[in-house]
Length: 298
Image (cartoon, rainbow, N blue to C red):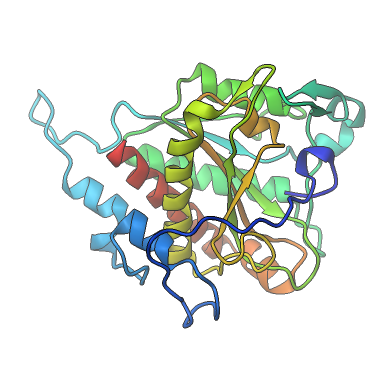
């Protein structure tokens, strides 16, 4: 997610409320205090789980049989909306994406171009690739998956208002917006953005704040475990979580929704991961396992 447009203004640093148990993951990120994420969302420890103990594997193993005697997929009947951040062709449509839209609390640009690595790998290309991989994984678990846009269109956008509306119209059980950051070199790591309480205009996030936080914590814990990417060292104070009230895609959602910044495209260490197809598959797997865990418990 680039901080080049008002929709993605840099958030204020906040000290989050910590859970009852804080575990120092010194072996992975010295000083980072995010052990409670794994403890509260996947049963503790936060260590590397084998395939048999992952949420996806446990969900598959516990799938029940349907009326026809066949094993039911664990996410049968669940709807997930994936929102790939930005659009590869946004830069060709400055007038359209710069148009102000109502996000409830105020008005912001329809969309932004996003950021890119120093060698030109665009955030919009990254988000679509991870979205496609994530869709395959979730559909393999039986979920109905919808993307807010795909490489076959639209030519730009859609606006952040429409991105939220797609999830709302689908009555999604979970929605996630995929991004990569454009912070200064040396800032690295991932973080998950949670909706804060907003009640203004067309925005009322109060019903989704709690379930979105649950979803976000599960995604953060599994993303850390599967990818090894450290929590952000510049947002979230090592928790990998950040709460915001200025994003239209969250403000206007009526279904549980979070954003994930998978890493910083402008940092050389993170860029090496983000440009790797092997790592992007891990990113999709980590996100998938968090969503599966959330949907199995919801």
